[in-house]
Length: 252
Image (cartoon, rainbow, N blue to C red; front, top):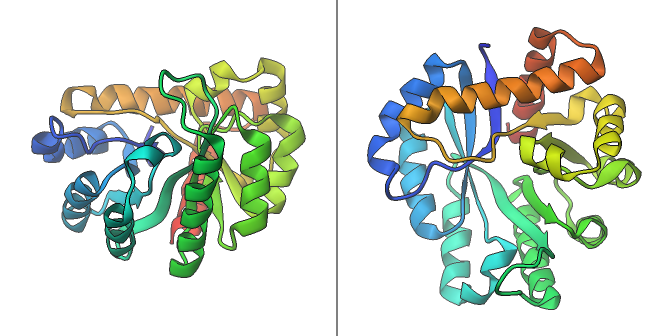
């Protein structure tokens, strides 16, 4: 399928970086037109900015994950602000709230402080926010509603039908990954996909890819698009075109 857009992927690890040109060529030949690469630290962001300045299929997002709160000091905040100003950095993210039961639990109050600080940075710089939300839908919605003044996208959306309208009303797009669809309530997720406005819908691999795996990434995206087409009763070409328009509108 040509013209696919991956709105959330990772291709910035040290092992993949030397092969990025081969990976980009493989992705293009497999039908992927654009990839938003998500960076979690300044080193990753610098690598990906250099890639995006050479290869227009790449866009960049950089922000601090809620799971990294305990690693972030003022030096990291300064690096974030300077790097996000780059023209190829299209968004602040992924940022948000995560209440999953990890081995190291980050206190909710610290997650909230870092999330709100980055929401304000997105406002100040006029760039969309890419939102990470896991087992924290109510708090995530509340903090976005109270602080975010620019559009954004909830990646890997699994917040359910009842909160869908709230996220849409505050200007958010919703992006769907295979993992989020598996973790969410099946019928609840079907209802979200069937009923949400087409002009707010995105898809994502949420994965790492290298040159040998580029076709697998495209196949992964294609399957997600197929599932959404079945639920909405749409042709694949029409949905792919709508996703491309939505991505361009959000990250222009």
